[in-house]
Image (cartoon, rainbow, N blue to C red; front, side, top):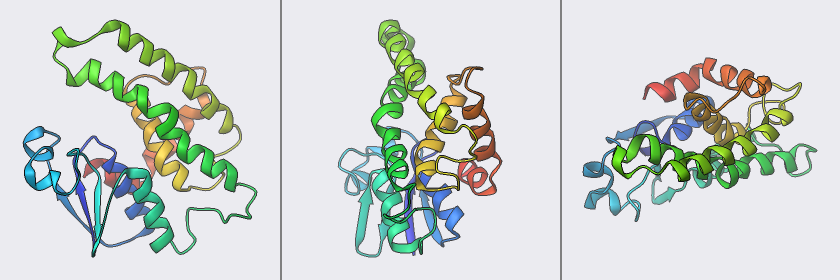
Length: 202
């Protein structure tokens, strides 16, 4: 059985969401989002930087949420949630799948560090402002791509597992402005999915 090493409020939520959407059996090793768990010798043996998610599948161990999504879809998806290479939507699928970690999540990480994780005396308002401006530039193309669509390539796909989860986190951080109605509707649709709700409650 698949085993997911998980901490709440992290990218590991993406993987629970994916496994729930696919109806795959899995077990969770739930850890606190705290150095006592994530930086323990036990967990560093799974991930050299002490991060989540980590997926165990028999003798296979993977970290990096995007790699895990691709692996699960390729090995267990049976063609679901990923267009074939000859599908006209395949290029867009790849683009938005990787846009998540390339363009959206780096500044989100900085925002979380300088609003939540660091003590107030160590937060840098200049760095925070730069990150907020970067997100402000990264999200409008997603809003535009969602015009007339429920999900990034029409139907729910692995690209939504990646970028949809990131968009939801942007909403939580108050980063989706009123002039991005397509993106707000997208986040609302994702939040209403039972599989996503179970992932967020994990």
